[in-house]
Length: 163
Image 1 (cartoon, rainbow, N blue to C red):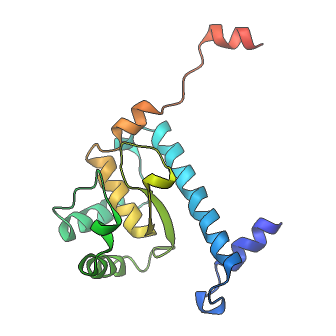
Image 2: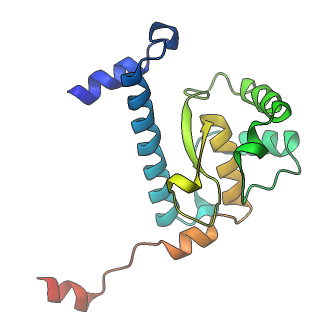
Image 3: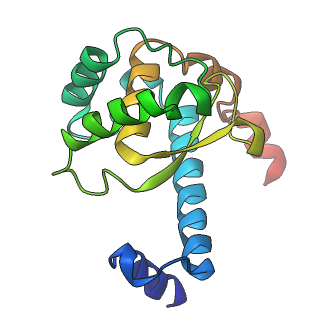
């Protein structure tokens, strides 16, 4: 019940809260949960087959039109959040402002070949995350993490010994 109450709070306008630490903690928890779900998807489904939204094709085409030279395999705050880049990303995001949660904060892996960790996380907004992760999936940058963190398949002999 408390989680449902927290979710309803997070859908309210930010201006109502100021710098409320409880709301910041709930956002952080939601961002972490999103990161874990995304990583589980990456390790379960071949990235080239993964669709994150019904708009993947449009997001990817617009992303590569607006950021043709951005190397998405390994990113940093400096690469994404300089004054010039912030403006470009803001303009990109506004093209998707009809999409639900397009500006919500989320965590993204800085290095696509590694799993989530405090040292390998960047806080970005949702459509930025989607654009970069769709590019990583389509351009093969998430393949290494998929291969190295795939769940092990149970064999019949393993199942028999555990019964």
